[in-house]
Image (cartoon, rainbow, N blue to C red; front, side):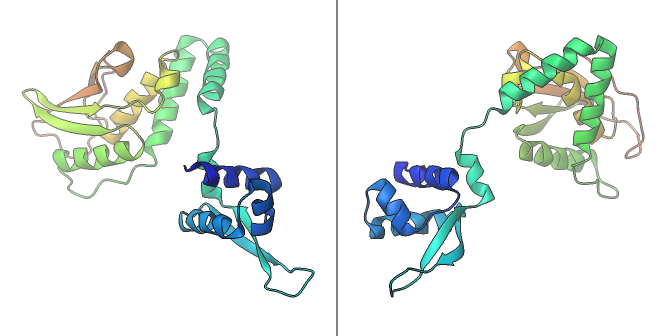
Length: 221
């Protein structure tokens, strides 16, 4: 974000709203320059004009500028620290079996956001759908054929800052992948938190298994 436009966003965050004249005075810039920056911010969907403030003297009314919801992405966040604190408290209060069960449930919940399978979908079509969904969730997913079947790779851990200290999140990811695969036998081959370039999962090629028959999952390390 260009520095002047970032400062405009900060002023609007602090004040709630401002006119061109308000911003011009605070920034020490001409009204023409301020309007130029506001036009760019409006084009990018970061500010909007919600009302008109009429001048005391004759002349054209002034638009009042406010932030849109999209502007929140340009302000600092601290989600990783919050998540770490929450996970620490959960781990302190739950025994390991209950903790694992909790994150299995979380993985199940995350899987509900995936698009449903198409009737008669092949395994490769299913893998295409799964990798598209996982990539949309920040995992940077790819799949490839191997001698033993198929390998699904996720090259990015969206929770990496948290997962290094809270590897129970790997249980969540394993459950997510298993549900996306309709519980086909799945073995985890590698994990990013252990230094591997990807979290990888082996899916043996089914011999004559009908689509979406429920099969037990092996949560291999």
